[in-house]
Length: 310
Image 1 (cartoon, one colour):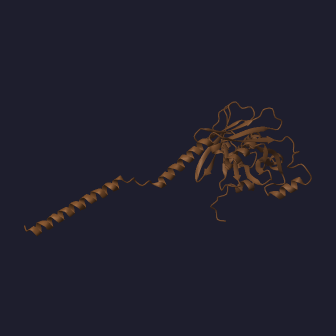
Image 2 (image 1 turned 90 degrees about the vertical axis):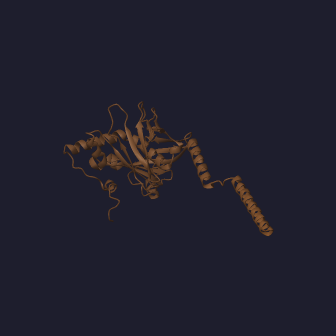
Image 3 (image 1 turned 120 degrees about the horizontal axis):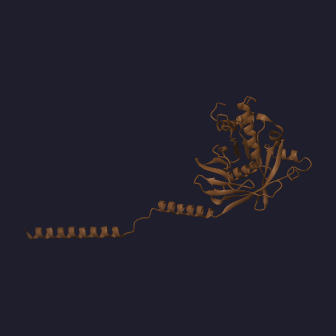
């Protein structure tokens, strides 16, 4: 090998060694750098923690309201010259036979009233008699309605061998779904009754039931969710002339639809025993052929097929 060739090979070897050393140093520097943090996962984890914390805090709070039933019609809503005509002008839902019978008190102030259609309940009979209640705001803006579904009630009562199974539909002003609340046919003598229903929440159902308390003196019910947790209570006062119920809902369940359902149900408690007797009597009369069953148009509309051609 000549001197020039040896010198050239030596230079190439040194260059390769230098390049290898530089690559090793660069690789070590990359390894020592901290790994990038996935900010999207961190944000999701943070939101989950905040949501869990908010839910935990909400479980410690309660939303309270009272339902006070008036004994007489002499109240600020209906008593006075032309009061009924002005009320009808405020809301189309305030019909000519609407009788306001209770007020909703929250934080010491009236926030709503309950009424029922007096002619349908007091003056009618047979299949024409049914309970229709409405919830209004303090300014008589319509919030929700509760209709007795006689067809469904009689169907269930006949299937339960005469045990009255009342069914109601609830229509709220801010929801696309109807809520059906139904007395359970699974009831033994002397054991408490249950009324079940569910609410749609972002396409998913949330199930609830009102269970009458074992020790019940004033119309007391406990609200139980689908996990068996007690998330609300209706406490009826004993020594009252008209009727008074103290109600509460746990904070993580106290959304407007559930509160409206609870307010209407509490008002229905005043008519509960009458409604059961009415449905039971109709079922027996239909079974024995004493009356011909008929469903009023307003109730029939609630059974209409939503996919029908219009």
